[in-house]
Length: 93
Image (cartoon, rainbow, N blue to C red; front, side, top):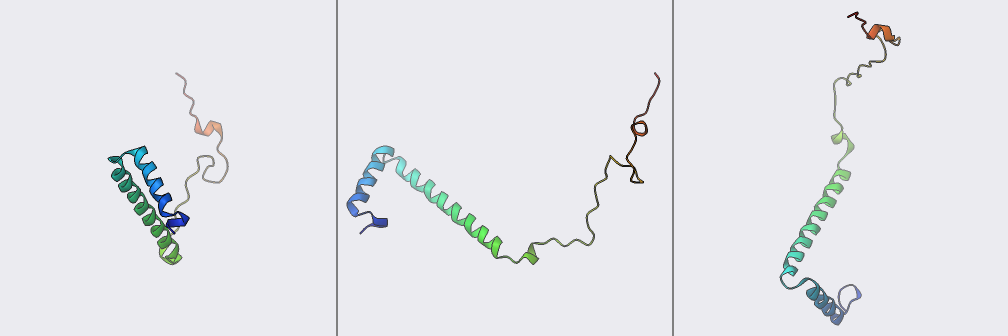
């Protein structure tokens, strides 16, 4: 019994087909790029697993004061909406 239910003859046949399709010069390039892709995928999976295992306490950013609220241009300082005449200056030219 071979790999994943494939027998030895079937694996040789698949290898010969791949050899004919890509050629002998391209097989090492394909193998190295496939290996790099698998290593990158494994490192990404490890990184995600590490992020999930880290307690939430270490992820939080502790601030002494809350961030300031952004200033709104739609309301004046007393909470009332600004009037158009207050914000636009009229000059006679």
